[in-house]
Length: 343
Picture 1 (tube, rainbow, N blue to C red):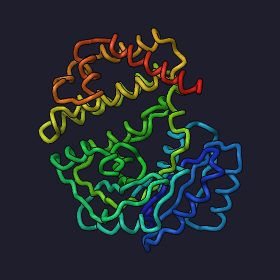
Picture 2: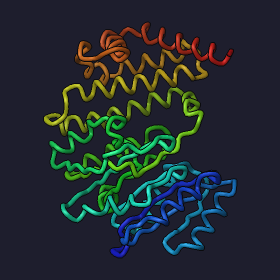
Picture 3: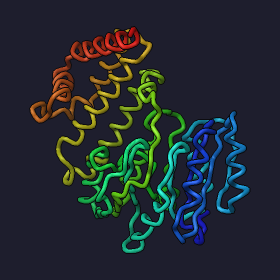
C-alpha cells in the first residue's frame, strides 16, 4: 500500500554481497534530500555476512527495512520489494552499486513541475572520473518524446535507458498495470520490465548528472557463457518481441532502423555467449541459426548499406541467411579464447 508520507522506496536486492553492501547502504541513508524515503533491502537467502550487515543498518536507521527470504533470484527479490514498497516512487539500486549523496535531491527537484511518470539519472562506472558539465535536464513528452527516449544510446548519453537501476518509476503505474520481473527467465528480464513500463507512460525526464555509480568486476567478460545458449536465444527473442511492440506504437517517432539495430545488438550478444559457451560449434551454430530464422529477424533487416564495420557483416549474414558467416565468427572467437588462455 502506498503511504503518502513516503516519497521514494529504494529497493535493494541483496545476495552474498558482504564486501559491497555497506558502501551501497551508506550512500542511500546519507542522501541529502529533505523528502521522506525508505530503503527496502531484500535479502535473497544470503549465506555470508550480508544478513547481519543489513540487519545492523535496519537497527540504526528507522527508514531502512529488511525482508529476509529464501533464495529465489534477483527477479523474485525485486518483486517482493515492489509488493512491500510504500513510496510514491520506486527506485532500484543493485547492492554492489551506490549513489551520489545528492542523487535523490536532484531527481525529485523537478518532478512536481509536470505529471512525470519516469525519471532517469546519469551513470558512470566506479573506475571512471565524473564527466564535467553534465548538470542539465531533458524532458520527453508524448509519443514523439518517448519514441525519441527509447532510441537513445545509453553508452553515449550515460543514461541507463533499458536497465531498471538509476530510475524513478511511479509505484501506482507498476501496480495498476501489474508489471513485475518475470521469474521464469533469468536473462534480460529486467530489460523486458523497463521496456514494458515505457509503453505505459507519456512523460519522462532525464538528469545527466552521473549520480548512479556502477561497480564492474575485473572479470566482467566471465559472465559470458554462464547461462545455456538456448536460454540466451530465448531471452533475446523475448526482448525483440517487446521492442517490436514499442516500435509499432512509436513507429512515426523512431528511426525506421530501430528494430534492425536491436536485432544486430541481440545477435552480437548471442555470438559472444556462443563463443564462451561449452556447447560444440555445431550446437552453438544451430541455435544461432534458429534465431536467424525467426520471422521477427527476417522481417526487420531492411538496409545493409546503412551499417558499418562488424555490424554490416552481421546485417549481411542475417539478411541473406548466411549462417556460415556467423559460424566463422564463432570459430574465430573460440580460437582467440584458446590462444588467450594458453598465454
